[in-house]
Each structure stands twice: as structure tokens, then as C-alpha cells.
Image (cartoon, rainbow, N blue to C red; front, side, top):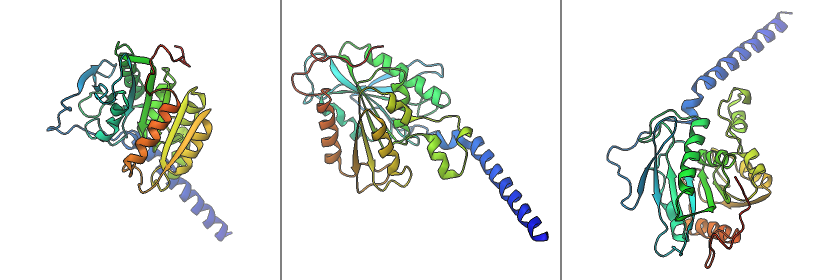
Length: 289
């Protein structure tokens, strides 16, 4: 009987420790998911950026708009890509290399999250989604942008953000780099129940509902988000494709930029979103508001 009592006390102690751990994660989840990242005081927007202040309920969200490069530009309204960065980045620190979409003849819009960089407010799934929706609406209202050829691109948390956006606005394609299937699935790594999560970012459900093509790029040795998440995302999408990257982990992907841009360009051409002679008038949109 004393031994049984000891085991019961041990079990109760472990349950108490786990309960405290779960309460701690619940209280700190905003700091873990959205670590507030201020802008470098010395940083300035690129010289060729059109700086926007996008109105949201949290205050003006900063955004940078870039037209296609001269080498990639085509006559008439151009396709565009809205890009969303990871949780510990800002539009200042997000790699400029991702603006390589411009060389494919696409306009590029980078949008800041509430509470990040020079944008006021407090980040949450709802606030981030609101900012992206407002930026999307301003982007598609431009006469030089083809609203039927908008691509959503996100890395890590940004992938979850553009998946949430895809449930609110019609887009032609999704490109997801190092993205989780949901933050709820990630909670298992921390031995916490998913119901405690206030910001689930359910990318898996979003890609399952998305009607257009989805490209998932993910490292086979990502230490933060297992490659299994990418497999699940690509399989859930009705038009999903998976490209596995090597030689990188998480935030340092891709290691081979030539490989990355070759795969992305092939995907966009296969989806009839870029290419010579393509205009918004000779392509039938899959979506309607």
C-alpha cells in the first residue's frame, strides 16, 4: 500500500507540473508565436519601393510595393505576388532575394504585421489576416495589376498567414516555404493540448479548400517544422506539388537559389500565371468573389 500511495503521489505531481507547463505556454503563446520585432532605426525602404500605409483597425500597416523589373515586364496589367515573412522577421529583414519574383514579370507587395517593424498594434491571427486582406484589396485595385493573377507566398508563419488570407480573398496560386500544417499540430512537440491555442493558423484546412495550384517547398532537415508537415500540405491540396530542398534547415532556406527560382518559375508557368503572350483577358479566372 505505501508503494501504491507513492506512485499516486508521483502521478499527481507529474500532472501538476504538466498543468503548470500548459498554463505557462497558454500565457506566453503570443510572445512565442509573434515575437515583437522592431525595425532597425537606421533601416530605410529600398529606393525603388513604393511605401504604402495600409489602413487597419490596429493602425496603419506598412507595405512595400515593387513593380516588375524592366527585364521581366510585359505590356498590360501584370501578375503580382503578396509575400508574408516569418515570425521573427520584418519587411526590413525579409531577404531581398524573394523579390526575385519581379524578374519573372510580377509586381511584389510585402506587408508588415501589426506590432512588427514600424507598424503599430498587437499581432494575432485575426490582426495579421486583417492586414493581409487590406493589403490584398489595395493591390487588386491597382489598374496596373491583374487581379486574376495574384499569387500568395509565405515563409514559416507567413505561410500560415497567406493560407488564412486565401480563405478570405480569391488568389490564383499559393507558394508555401517552410510552412506548418497548423500550429495546433505543432503543440504536440511541446506536450500541450491544442485547445489552449488561440491562433491555430490551420494551413491544412486552407489548402484543402483552396481551388488553385499549391507549391510546397520544404527542407528535408528542417529542425523546427518537420518535413512531414510539407507532405501533408501537398497531399491535402487538390492541385498540390511538393519540392524538397536540401542543404538548409529552416530560416536559411533555400540554400540553392537557382534551384528555388527554377522550380517556382516552372510552377507559375504551368499554372499559366507567367509567360510570354499571357494577359488577363485571355485567361479564365478560377475564382469569383
